[in-house]
Amino acid sequence: MSNAPCGFVAFADDGTITDVNQTLAGMLRHPRAELVGAHIEKILPPGGRIFYQTYLFPMLKVQGQVEEVYLALRASDGTDIPVLLNGARREREGRFVSDCVCLRMLQRHEYEEQLLEARKLAEQSSAAKAKFLAMMSHDLRAPLTAMYGNAQLLESGAFGPLSPEQRESVEAIRAACQMQMTLISDILEFARLDSGRVEITFSAVPVSEVVARAEAIIRVHVSEAGLSFTTRGCDDSIAVMADPSRLQQILLNLLTNAVKFTPPGGEVAVMCEREDERARIRVRDTGIGIAAEDLPRIFSPFVQVGSLPSSSLRGVGLGLAISRDLARAMHGDIMVESIPGAGSTFTIDLPAAQVDVLTL
Ligand code: ADP
Image 1 (cartoon, rainbow, N blue to C red):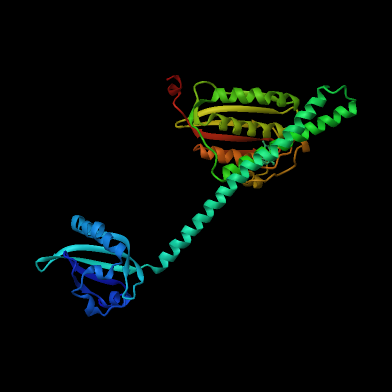
Image 2 (image 1 turned 45 degrees about the vertical axis):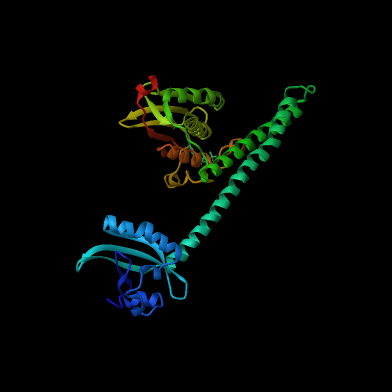
């Protein structure tokens, strides 16, 4: 017991040390005999004495025991020895004695300091990231907005009529600006999601509303691409618990892909269904499909597979990564099934909301 690999000290209610093992005496560099009979405060630093009077001893007295108390003991040369202490107060030979075991915690102390330092660095880097994002969103977008606006002005004939070649050139500038703006938004959105900076505001959202809004936006692209568009089951009887604008964003991403990867003459459909506590919105296309071995990769950032559509429609491969992160942030997910050459179905799975909540 005396040389066990942990310190042991027993003290009476008045603080007198009644027993101490050799391990603890050695740890504190005191002769053992000098400690027995001394006051417990002899082996505590000033802060530890206050802790002993206001917490440690009262807890022992009230609860009869303490566990995993982290405190410092004071060695004879004045250095502090951090220890983890477990104690129990019991009656022995007519008086109360508190028995305590102390494990030396030097390494954990160093480890904690390293953790604190690492946390400080992470906080600094996260603040730098936030500043960078705010700066980038403004500085990258502002010149593009100016280019886009001026191209639009030229195109409208505000500065005189354009020759067919000039018009074509101006249109190309405007289309390139548009594409660049989409890319920047995607990259910034992904960076924001990655640093946990996206706020989600939940409400009960009828799927009919989200689908109708997405349809209004996508319709023109659907007909330009020579496709047909249908919806099924997306009525007022189904609602989801989600952030309406985020859900809209996901649905538009999936619909844009469906249009992008479906050759003319094909079909894009949105289907809604409810099953117990979950609701699902499916986006199905009859497009080029995705090979089975590529399916697990397409949700990873910057991954594009198979043959790519014409360059004006090319993204950077962030749409699905963003969509899935957003769905997961709303306690949902996105799944995919596909048959190469026949088409793909992307399913947004979300918690269903009570429809009567909507009418309150
Ligand atoms: P992006 O559309 O910008 O390339 P996404 O993250 O939206 O990026 O999609 C990643 C990749 O997944 C696409 O490049 C494409 O290869 C594949 N993909 C996504 N949706 C479909 C779809 N409906 N049909 C076929 N392939 C798809």
